[in-house]
Length: 116
Length: 114
Image (cartoon, rainbow over all chains, first blue to last red; front, side, top):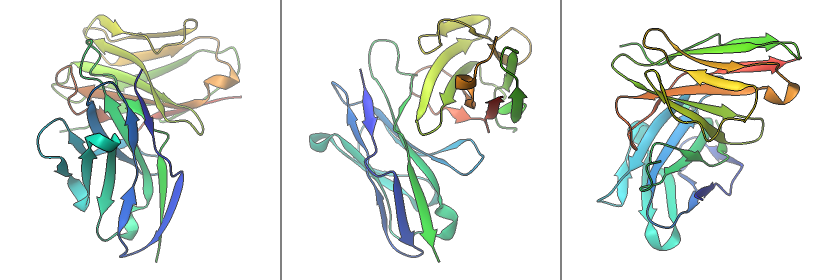
């Protein structure tokens, strides 16, 4: 069964600093990979996704993520964090085979706090 | 284009009552997914429905939980005889096709069982 690990439960950064949120997955092959963001009391918004091709993926709000097959990782990055980026971030995967590629498996999330 | 709509946003039920959660997918979307977010846990897949069909309910608890997506109207997640452990946020998502396409999430229904 596939699984997702987000090692950092809570990260605090200063506004303007760079950010990297870690995500590792366990799956027999390369899954479909996603990053979602959830603001307090809100639903999830897709930041970016990786299906194939270029391993560096650009998303909305200035975020990017890099897929590294050798490390089974899909880390999210942003060069300069804004106060409005404070939220909870979820990494998710979906399997490529077996007819269940619609089923997202989420990590437990990383809560981002941004200090002024 | 309105997004995925869920109602109610907050629902309080006493133990033993029934909870009915509604989800209207985005216009043009015929695939609906329900996820549950328990405290201190990530989101867990519950069920995948298309109009009038349950495609995959492998994440649904075996008892008390049911889901439907009728030909007309919203998708309904129904929880009978709620217990305190059912307290969670329930999210609905929709997509225009099946497969690993972007799933658009609603704002969720936060169920509290007292």
